[in-house]
Length: 246
Image (spheres, rainbow, N blue to C red):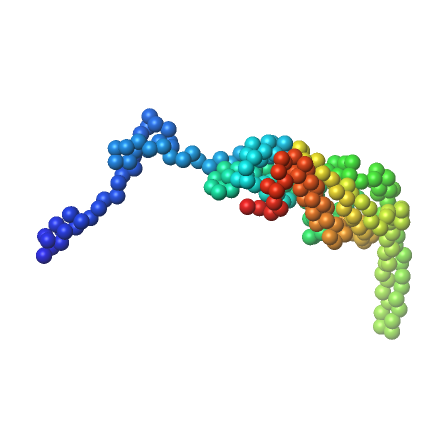
């Protein structure tokens, strides 16, 4: 019985053909049952650095096969929408100044005076009115103590009342405008205005910054619209352009 079963399997069991590669051949060349085959090339994913390169690739194909997708994260050219194998991609990243402002809206422990001034002079250089830095330099924190006596029926206690103030703080505006780059890509210069409110905690001698809700999102959305306009001008056929991602 076992012998018959083994004979049956030997006659009817099909072994899948072996795919072989040869060291002297490129990786995309293989052999199957003694015949030589050339595989499809690996999908291309070109990395563009500017809008001109994106448009050049998209305009190479005048038919309806190539599509261009864009949003705040990337611009992607799908060279053939039927196979969707080959892409040209330009990744977009928010700038460090804009990401820093976003961080203020999420959580911030405040800034000491010298740290805030240094931040404005470095990362945000050219992004805000120089008069604000001059005003911040004039702020002086001071404290004064007066002894006070409390008399009760059982004991007398002497404590100290501390009064703190910040001279020059009245000159600081309630809020101010920061004109910051939207994207970190140097070949895509776009800026936007973000309104930021400022407050002072006199006791801790720290400054707190609060971006006005909705302003960062508005700046990024405006940049997306501007991106769409620039691509429309560069493309031979604007019907190839789509907002979103493939």
